[in-house]
Image (cartoon, rainbow, N blue to C red; front, side, top):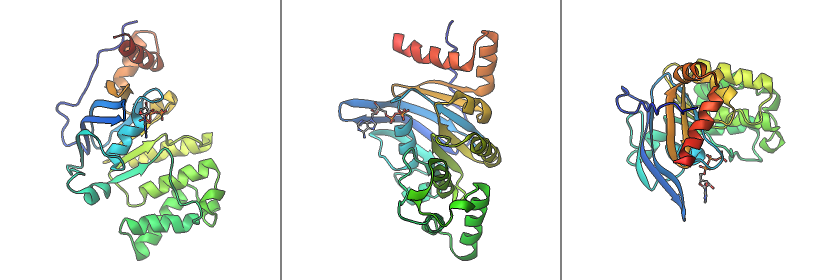
Length: 259
Ligand code: ATP
């Protein structure tokens, strides 16, 4: 089966909230990113796919401002993080692959700490923490220390920390890893509620997640974007070819390996 044509939509997207252009990153001899470009507009939920080592985490870290690129540009809501790192970071909620939460801190204190570090105080802080606790079902672990939380709770605590200041750009690295089926369903509902007006990019290896939650797919392979298309287009292509999105993704990855 022929892989679908590359349908990059970078060129003329109006007012993207997130813009990556020509990102390059090298770790010693290893070229991790070789010119990664894509934009994410308000209302888009983008599934960021790629094999192990393809460059997803590296891209997300650069976009979140926790790793410096060797080349290329990032814009967050029109802001260059290189020039205005605090203003850019204030607009980003980042759920890292390894959460880096303070192990010995109680969950409630941790959420309050994250809120305070994002400028919330007093009643606004208390209200926001209460909203997130309810939304992410964290009441049972509020008094627990982070290291006492199960993986699923821990993931949700980290998600709450990422959402605390209600950012416009959400970057999630394998957000459903460790969640049980009920929590995965709750996460999908959360994404649906969050998506209006926000740009959401999340990495995953689970195509079911992409089909359930995303309206666009970006596939990276060996540090290069090899597919960027609306989910509906991929679904139509898969249907016409009598195949599946998984087949299209695998074909596109293999096409690069063969090239
Ligand atoms: P996974 O799905 O396994 O999490 P990924 O798509 O997120 O993979 P990255 O973690 O971005 O991939 O890694 C891209 C490439 O860069 C890989 O070859 C990886 O081994 C390499 N790499 C990542 N971080 C480092 C590092 N700190 N030092 C050296 N090489 C690294």
